[in-house]
Length: 166
Image (cartoon, rainbow, N blue to C red; front, side, top):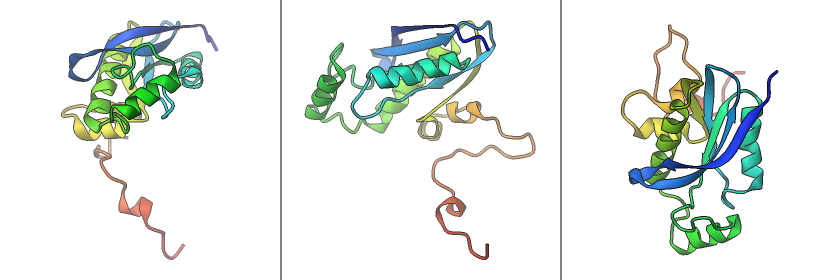
């Protein structure tokens, strides 16, 4: 497997048209390749989540992780950014803002020269529920042609209730 990549801090257009910091790791394969939007954990945009992003690129995908706390503390260390976001009331990050950041990350990934246009990630179901038209979530694992595509807005009762008789 060819695992060469380019990883760097970039700027993408996020929620409301704002420019935000993001971490990009791109495979250097010719393509076409898929993409993944990585959402960082509560402590923030740190070394560990950047490593997760690079792991996707080493596996042959393009990946990008938007810095969800960029507005509250641009360029700050992860712990300081989390504290600033918490102090400003931005934790938890509002759904609309996450959807906007993910949409910006998806647009960035789809604009790469080696992209196949298919993008998935942690917040894909949430984004798919709130955006009209084709969804980011459904593109990561296409449904078989015989099955209707559904928007994953809520867990299926069959997945949340115990099975009887088995």
